[in-house]
Length: 182
Image: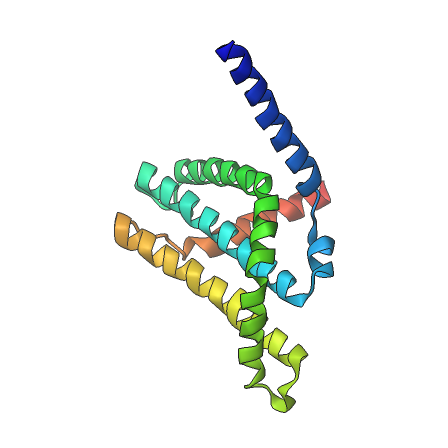
C-alpha cells in the first residue's frame, strides 16, 4: 500500500509541476511589460545577473579544467562552450522562476527609480527610469562581469588573454564574410 501511495504522490507532484510549467512557462517579456516598468527593469536586472553568472561560471570551469583561457586555447574554448550551453539550457528552464523573482523584486526596483528621480532635471520619472537602466542594468552588469573575470584570474592565476579577443573577432568576421561570398 505504501508503494502505491508513493507512486500516486509522485504522479501528483509531477502533475502539479507539469500544470505549473504549462501556466508559467509561457510568460514572456510582453507579459512582464504589462506588469509595469519596474517589473520590466527588474526582469532585465535578474536576467543579466543570471546570464553573467553563467558566463563567469563557464569561464571559471574552462580555466580551472584546462589551465588556459578560453580565448587562447581551443580545448578551453570547447570546455567553455559546453559549460555555457548547459547553463543556458538550465537558464531557459528556470525562466518562470526568473520572471517570478522579477515581479517579486519590482517594488524595490520602483523605489530605486524614485531615488534616482531626485537627481534628474524636473524630477521626471522617465529620465529616472533611464538613469536606473544605465546605472543598474548597464554599468552594474559590466561591473559584475569584469569583477567576476578579475576574481577568476585571482583564483586560478591564469590570465584571460583579452588581447586574443581582437583576433577572435577578426576570425569570426572573416568566417562570416567567406560564408557570405560562398
